[in-house]
Image 1 (cartoon, rainbow, N blue to C red):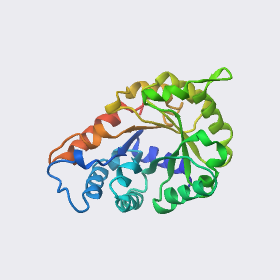
Image 2 (spheres, rainbow, N blue to C red):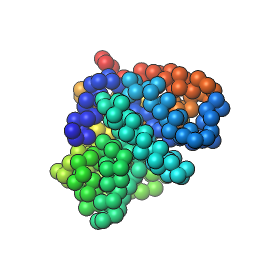
Image 3 (cartoon, helix red, strand yellow):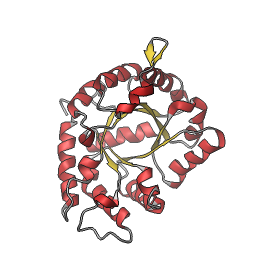
Length: 270
């Protein structure tokens, strides 16, 4: 099953556009969680179990695991999500970007080791840097208009009368899509840009970070980026959900926060 088919299945099963980002930081773990063996996996698993029926996707961020030498925990977590919640799409947030044999190794990491349905990539190196990902049958989600203020340094530069992020959107929609299933990343902090990207890419899925801790307005994101069928988006929230409580009720609090976020991201008529 390809990324687009998997994601369509996830939207239908969950009736949700919400994506929960899994960014485990032991400094923010609840006091009740024993900070010892397996803490990273146990924390993420409890969040997953508490929210899986409310989301279309989970998005573990690889840096939070790798910096703690917890890649084995990430591997276990990804396997657990895929096997236990097959209707949920798994996105590896890795922002890979390289060429040739190195891109091939990144593809094996994302789809072989971690079993992700899709991986985020940096489009700066162009089309040949993502071909190996398509060869492994996974989806590619290209950074387009990111939610951070510094993204404006390059992404809004004029490129022949259009900003660079629109050129990226055109490249992904017109060229990369010939090789396999694609998506884009556009921050909720820029709803006008999100609307412009949607007009360029048609029904391609868009991963929308930036709600919650970064201050993006979820209803504005839905209005700007949803397809005519009310789908097309994975609206991601991480810290506002997974760190909703620092006490023993952290999983229950995460569920409550996810319920609120899901309601805030429901298109009209759902």
